[in-house]
Image 1 (cartoon, one colour):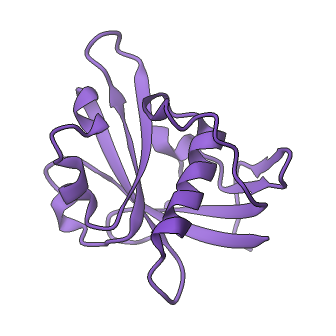
Image 2 (cartoon, rainbow, N blue to C red):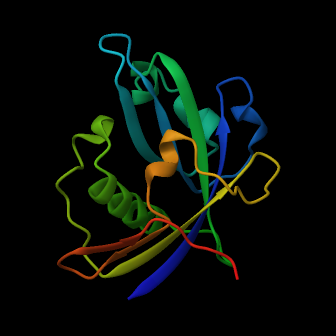
Length: 158
């Protein structure tokens, strides 16, 4: 079993997202569709910057019309994360969180036992105390043991 820490920095909007130059990351998008006003979620990965990735004309980003927020998830590790690691972490988040815009990947169970610790940072890289954004509904601690999920909603410093 492996454990990973993901530092989620945000929220960015479309205008300031190009300031984040991290590559080989996960990203979250939240916002409302024009049709019904419900909050929609999306989780993705990119080996380029998130700004470059979402500007693809066929990206799911364009289905979210208002209140759009972006979070960039940097994996804490010495080496650059491989594409297969990014895909494995994306798979865990999608399978657990069930974001509506990832409908093609919702039922793919993770292949291995895994632990993810999500830390939330502001745009200056400082840890957030309050959780007030839609993306932060993802639990701080997620453990998949191969059969079931174990989660914690808050990790406190001592």
